[in-house]
Length: 248
Image 1: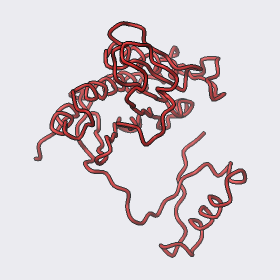
Image 2 (image 1 turned 135 degrees about the horizontal axis):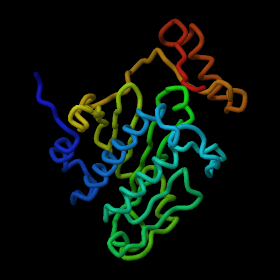
Image 3 (image 1 turned 120 degrees about the horizontal axis):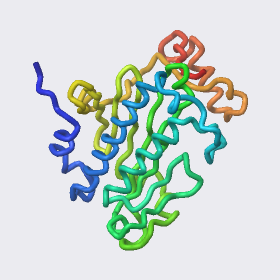
């Protein structure tokens, strides 16, 4: 039996992969892991608890109907990040504006986190997988001050880490710091994320495509041409790709 490597152990063993490694980025990943464990627990009992299932009655900045789990997940992450001391502010899909943490400790933080706390949360009512998406940046504003909108509006190439958590038949956390992608599956018996998908890579050739084809007519012509290519026998496999898209 191969040795089980937990997320904490993996982060420690690969500390050199972290830009500006001081332990702070490791702390943020551990905060994300902790918050996601709480959300995973709540997702799994959603069908049994009326106070966390269904619509909240509000809409988010994207115009989408907020679910109760959206708000619960958002609050869970905000509490974890505000208590970290290394994060000066956040931006979340569930909030109209960015949030700058105003404690003296937080104002010294070097990082901001952008996240969607629970993407696809309406799917919870029909028992379909949902997820968290996150992105971490070094702040641009001076340390010791409140985080600014400019800290949040940086180009993707400036990310120091990014990833997602998938709440499905199992709970899985995937992240990268720019040096490979690794996946960890939550073992509920020990409450730890364990390395399950090391060095994840896209296959050279695929057999599956996924998109919301209800919007195909408003897509750019290049994307429409590519989907038609996937659906034809003229692609590199010689037969149509299989389509995968989860929605309700």
